[in-house]
Length: 264
Image 1 (tube, rainbow, N blue to C red):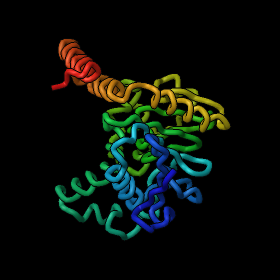
Image 2 (image 1 turned 135 degrees about the vertical axis):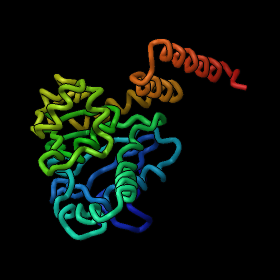
Image 3 (image 1 turned 60 degrees about the vertical axis):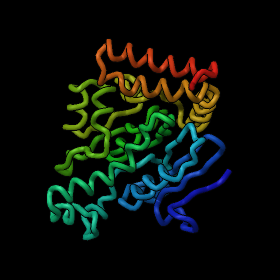
């Protein structure tokens, strides 16, 4: 097993994010347990950096939080401070510059939707705001029974902007998604499972083992088929039935030709 950090020789605690590689499995860990893994732009920069330096043979990425919570969301001390990425500084940028800055933040989250990998969020405790959106950008969400989701941006007068709104609406339907975003209320693990936000819910003591078993099952499947299936399903909502049928035909043609050696 090898370990990667923000940059060669940089301790994980300086960025607040670390990752471990174990063959085709990468584990990305939010490592600020003393503040419930509250997120900062430095953490987002490292998450985006990890996406660029992962080896090409990685098939599964597990995202987890150290300590008792997955992530308490945006670190308000940074948001309300005077750094380059504070809300005050963002407000001083032109609309185009502000949108570009936010696009950079989004890159820390959206790579988790890449068809070439399957991503799993292992969620315990709170996953609030940016923490909730980080979990939403993953393909699968395994929740401990003490997990709680909340889209709390509205309590700051803000909107969710880290790639979570589309997945939320797809999973719960637009009406429920609107209610979740407008109220900022806490969603317990059992409700999350009932409304489609959780892939499964397990006792907290079984979270790591359940994620390991799920990862093993994914790794056991054919890599090419896994990528094609993820692409088919992730794009299904944008296609008509006829378009999806065509996408299935084309994907299956690629698989048959690759498996039988007729890919020229």
